[in-house]
Length: 64
Image 1 (cartoon, rainbow, N blue to C red):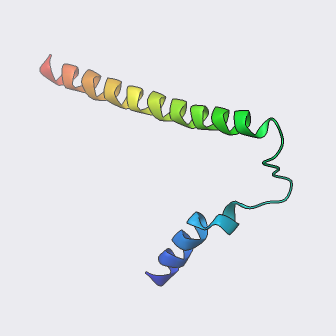
Image 2: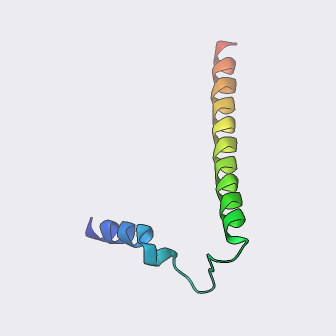
């Protein structure tokens, strides 16, 4: 249990996300972060879409 807590703390700590060369003052920093967020949301939407589609198609096969 303690090792899971340590791993979780390492994943959510701010130092885990820090790496050299990540310049937040660059003019492309905000658009890149926004596009990354849009990409993550897009993957989530596609996953939910196919999950719901699969659920409805399997329930329709059971009714036939």
